[in-house]
Length: 242
Image 1 (cartoon, helix red, strand yellow):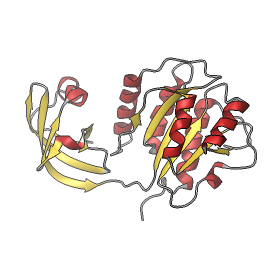
Image 2 (image 1 turned 90 degrees about the horizontal axis):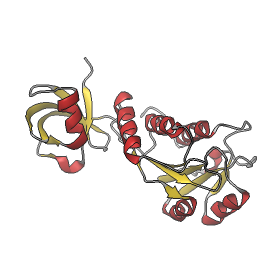
Image 3 (image 1 turned 90 degrees about the vertical axis):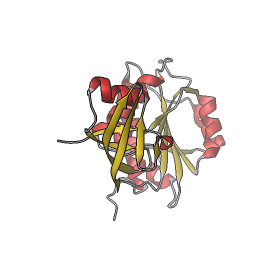
């Protein structure tokens, strides 16, 4: 039987011992009804799987013993997706698929043509956690609070490269916008209404590179997912390790 997977912080691991608290504790003990002696996999967002056995279950905390440690995956590049808020909970799908692809951080934002204004970060975090467990990833993607478009542009300087997916761009494919060796990359994709010419100009002034995702007009949620896949593939992050 496949072992269940749980995520903890680095501070919860010490001297061959893991402490599981919070929502993961509730899921372990109340939903799955795990008891001492059960075996699980614990990840701390460092690419490592810790195969553990539950030693004790106390009020608000489970204590586990680490039996073995396996280096499951490594990353050479960190990708942040700035995704325009989408109607009808479509951002749920984007979060799920971004996690499966290996995106490190998803940050929603509101721009001029965004119709949806509400975002539940706790719900998105639950979706991210479930997706990571389902696909067997040792990484747990971070979900940021919703930003304004101006706040997104203020973040541009923090990255080695920033790709701005613009529906009117026809000459620069996404893969050509990132140089080998970059370590911290961002992709900005708009909501259903796309970006205004003024937003495009502001993004370029801020240092983002205007890119196309192909000759067909994609739905916003498709553009998020395809953009992440194309970029991660161009950076070699979808390849098996050699």
